[in-house]
Length: 158
Image (cartoon, rainbow, N blue to C red; front, side, top):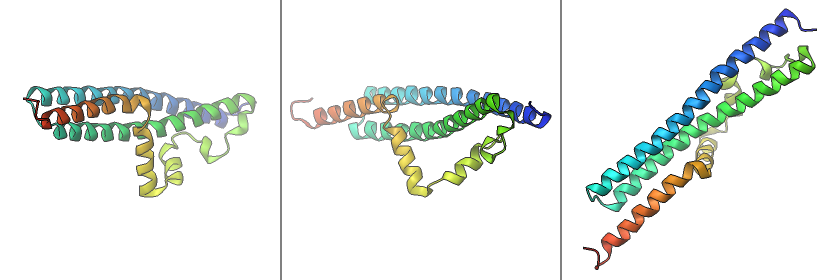
């Protein structure tokens, strides 16, 4: 039998899930915007025939920006999964929400307890940057930039 406190905790978890799911979806739009802006900047650099290294630099900057956004999104995804697990527990045992990890609005506290320091954060950014859906446009643009650079430096390119 679900007590009033258990029902309140469950409602708080549902509210947190809705808030975080909305943010998760917004983060996808932000990452798409980063990719589009990167492509526009790269095309603008091509139009004005700027040096290939400048294009590669901008591609790298946008890639890092997206990996940072994806890292934040990954933390939200972890919390969403924890909330969903907590909500699933309450369908089996309504009093199962006793631990701190089952409390609503626990995202940053949980993250701060598992934070690995600066090197861990950099590793987290790098792993998100290497995800195929993140890396694809940046690798393609960087390769194209280096191809243009090689062509600009070749004697037959005029």
